[in-house]
Image (cartoon, rainbow, N blue to C red; front, side):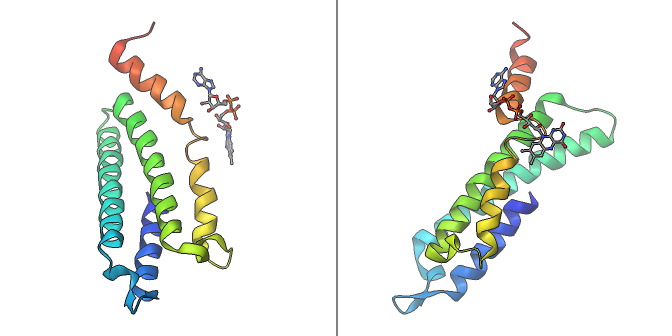
Length: 131
Ligand SMILES: Cc1cc2nc3c(=O)[nH]c(=O)nc-3n(C[C@H](O)[C@H](O)[C@H](O)COP(=O)(O)OP(=O)(O)OC[C@H]3O[C@@H](n4cnc5c(N)ncnc54)[C@H](O)[C@@H]3O)c2cc1C
């Protein structure tokens, strides 16, 4: 969640500061829509993560929800970082900007601590039972 939120924060700073066609990027509706979508995805994932942690804290861990939260939050991190880098344009590709490092860091989230495929196995087994 921190990675996704950090990428969104960087994108917001960039689109407010970068001027194109006499206006900040943030003035273009397509850019505004992208920011809105990124923020919505992060909030959805954060709610799932918080709910699964809340249940765990109360001694009622929910295996399915926890696997969903891990899989979805990591997917959101990959998507949001990708979009944040895109909003940086060519600057996003250079390692002077942190967003390039975030791009690489996001992908590994879908690999360690349970790959996204393994999370899907856990979720589907909780729903369908084991075959
Ligand atoms: C930076 C980093 C840090 C790590 N830190 C740790 C650590 O601290 N402790 C630790 O124990 N491990 C750690 N790992 C290892 C990590 O948990 C494994 O890389 C991960 O579990 C995937 O295993 P693998 O690399 O052997 O891939 P593989 O098992 O070879 O899987 C390759 C692909 O096939 C898919 N796949 C495999 N089996 C199935 C299946 N049955 N059904 C469907 N798809 C399947 C996987 O999801 C994956 O997409 C780390 C990895 C990285 C990259």
